[in-house]
Image (cartoon, rainbow, N blue to C red):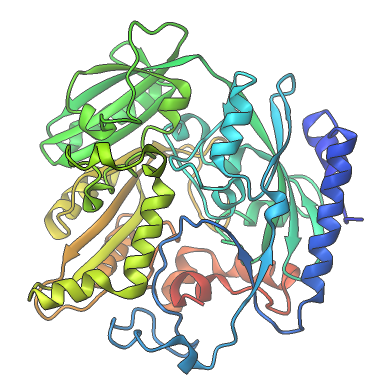
Length: 496
């Protein structure tokens, strides 16, 4: 069977074994995927076959010799011309369900390709939720751990990988191992976050859960300058609340340097009224309206998904004449992301702008973490040099003293995540990558880090300086010595 079967691993981690029938089916699936992986031709690159994706690396792959950040015209050549062998797709759909929820132990054992939509549905039945639930329904648990995730509980609970007790991983060299913080695979356990599937794939994860209230009581606090907003975040971080309102959740929305809001949420067992942003009303617009709101816990967790934050605007979905005609089942982030992918694949927007004589536009789709004491500086830079709004902000800190080598953050320090997703017109004479490089340089200057789910333009030396190249090289040699999976730089910067 496996080197450390999930049944034994989950019993040690959660205090309760999987039900026998569930365990038998899961171990059969593990044996099957390991056999299929090891039957692939030697030297063939492997990728995970997934129905959905929340990545935004739309650039064509570049050969290893190409400089990072090549201009759009240079990278528009057909992929076939680069003599690159296609990667073999590995079907892991058997690992897309919740295996077991143990409300007494406060844990769940979950397949790595399980979406948070399915995970939350299963745990809320027991009055519980994962400690951090990313904002989009089709993000998978394995994806949030290997690619990092964040949400409005991250000031209390850190990031999704910090509530993982054990991971069953199909490694690049074809083994299946269970990694925990205190076993022989502890280095893999700590190095898996931010490895983006380049060391292996999580087949199952044992995670902690926390109890929830029936409702979430929201209060929206307005600030008219970045510094006062950051001082409020510091107050919440120190005391767990703001102006008498408990902070189970906190995130924010920046419409401009003189209009920004922190939304502080507290679990509640009562709700004088309930709002619903799955229909005609739009959540982010409500932030500027009444200063108080109530949502069911499920509606709160998915408040951003219906309109993909504010990014459904280009599709007309927020127009009052179009919205009633757009079927509700298609008002969700994965539909919009598929439309964006179609547009990028066929160059529709670029062609339209070119025919209209409009300047080219650069996609600036990033999440960055900045130390709290430099976050006001970052907002001022972004407003001045990029000029996109709204911007999402979310404070976070590591849950404890444990650190994660491929995404170095300092224990005890509060950071602010800024998320910005859209396009901006390129200045005359500038090529694609202009704004993204500005962002990368400023993030580095302010002592922050940038997530790798979207396009990156770092040189190799810059990249490994930011993401601990020495630690990654040790892990890559130990768990994928033959390089069957793409390397982290190749995958996240070169697009291979």
